[in-house]
Length: 239
Image 1: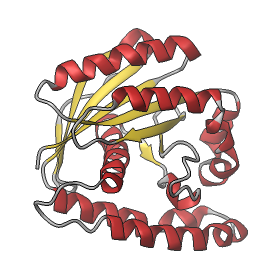
Image 2 (image 1 turned 135 degrees about the horizontal axis):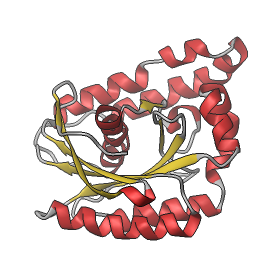
Image 3 (image 1 turned 180 degrees about the horizontal axis):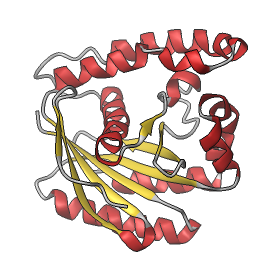
């Protein structure tokens, strides 16, 4: 399992690049370089208002989610309104990291993006659990945690939060939702077949060193829980 080759995502204003991982422990690393914040913010807004994923749900489940999706997508679209040249706000930054990471995993590894967790699991300021999810080619769900800092590279915070959430079984708490949204991968989750994503902002010139430090922590995480797969995604604002 490798992250393929570098590619430019013109539509989202980003570049995606593979980084060093650990094949023996199924740890894959990659980096997102944001080149155009305005273009990215527009794509983020388009993504959260796209409700096409609900069409596959039964009528009752659609009604259960409809208001939550409407209310949360409106809040998120306000966050996505950025002024060119202005500093990245923390709320926008965390969403940039989470959604940008899911996009990179799709681009480099062919993952399928699950609708953003905030759309179907209200968690504004409540730290309810994992921020985003993807499904990889082997059918496993991956549970993603995103951390943003305007002046640091919080890979340690992202990885420690993943550890805390696994211990609290917050991935299994998502099953009631995921069994409707993506039923087959959710069944694998019920048998402890899942992966995790630690996503974080990168600040600093030596991205290789930062990602290698994150890899060292991810190796410890893998050994602690015997995880099937881990994905590390560093996101830098180079606009």
